[in-house]
Image 1: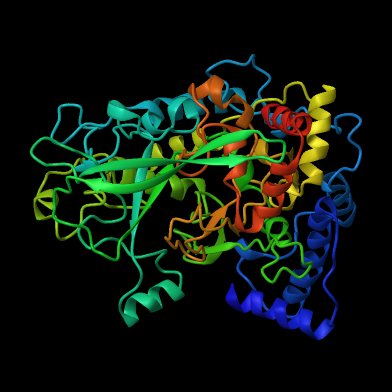
Image 2 (image 1 turned 135 degrees about the horizontal axis):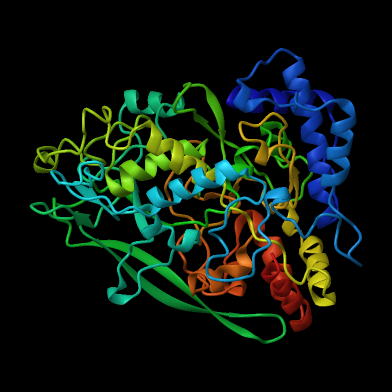
Length: 533
């Protein structure tokens, strides 16, 4: 990818075009056009890329390409809802009544037979794994170190997690552990994308607080908050809480002094299959690593290796876009969160390291009659299908005057420079339910520097310690309904959408400052728009 980006830079310098200065709403459109031309020129010039990094769509004929360009162009008419805006997850959008189960509905356009597959996947998603040996056999293999016993226990009601609350535990938020490379071999592995980062030599890639009988958990996450007062332009005072993290009672000695702690809240599961089918060219078209148009936004893709093919591809899942596919995301969670081996990650002892000898001596749950791993191919097939087909709920109140006014403010403040409203998914997808769908995720799925306040200091592939992937906003207005809380951002520090916006820095500083300078009516209208998503 560095070669690709460098080629784009050389192409721009050769063209000698001056930077463009645009309004906040127009800058995203301008960047799209510039990057589509530049990246397509790179491909035509013979700088061949793997399919996962294709810089132009080959699934569309010229007529369809023109239709897609027209329908995904940001609107300038805020007098009424846009066509198809109600169905923000395309034809698969759930029209069920709003409830705690709003994130747990299947895509509305899957077949009757696929509905059965979805329900089987849901059962496995909710299944509690047990330690080995056990009479259940097919559920053996928990841990030996783990964070939870079931996928659903972290992804509560298929929604977002919450930070630890006193004695309530940390079942839906955990600490990623990583350090910088310290040898030429490690640096080479990072440069070649064979590794995302380096684990702690004793505690591995994340802190596991729980363990099977006969073993101790690795320690406990501890969070301290300091309140910070922010005064808006109209005199309104908002209190923000700044967290700091540490590990209490580490069971296997101190962490490596170079190890960084990155808190990660479990994100909502809706719409993942649609995100997976956005054409790489459409995501790359929004990248502007050199900020050529001068709007202060320089989104970058995270380029990772596909777990199966080994080819370079586009990362699009996870807080740092460090994972390329839903199946790999599920395999990583099985291994790291539950300690279950899969064909993609055949780690029978999960995240246990060579320094944890007692952990590695524990029995695993492999049943030879079922296969060489604890969660064999059929399990992965079902869990992946389930994760790919959790429906996005329909919009609500989208024709209300205050919601339409808030949408206009969202555009005018420049929020769409990162929170790209619309995409049309690829044709010829593995499942027809995700094929050629107009979707409204409000994300560009790129990395952005969010400033020092949100930085975790931890790299993940191309992502630096200051960068985060733009999270999709669809469904954000149902957070309280589904999960009973309103904790936002990667670590749940924000207790409301207002707090989440005020934490934005770095590339999002200008948009954040416009929000802080707005009057009460405009701020409330913007929030009404977000709550309608």
